[in-house]
Amino acid sequence: MLYTQLKAEYSARRARLRGLLEQAGLPPLLVEGSYFISCDVSTLGHQNDQEFCRWLIREIGVAAIPTSIFYSNQANAPQIVRFCFAKQDATLVAAGERLSRVRNQAISR
Image (cartoon, rainbow, N blue to C red; front, side):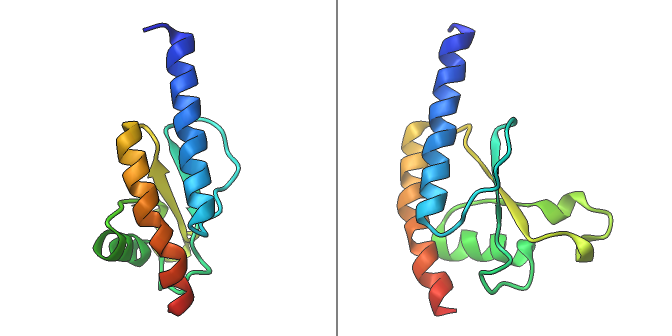
């Protein structure tokens, strides 16, 4: 596989996940690089990013990584989570369908 083709495929995956997150009410932070898109979840009514990620897995069926795990003092970490877009297209589509429930459940909290 050529590097330009690989780059195009990952750019498309990044754009797809970015759109799905925006539709779910999880506006992505504008950053470049890596295989992750980060979102600030501080306004969604969860105690912290780790609790949000546990809720996301239990209630929505999508996994995210709480960035507080990278901090020595997790209590001072911002409520930011990371979603990986280095997935198959079918996985991203399924995640998008599940993530569409986040907006409704976050509003009802």
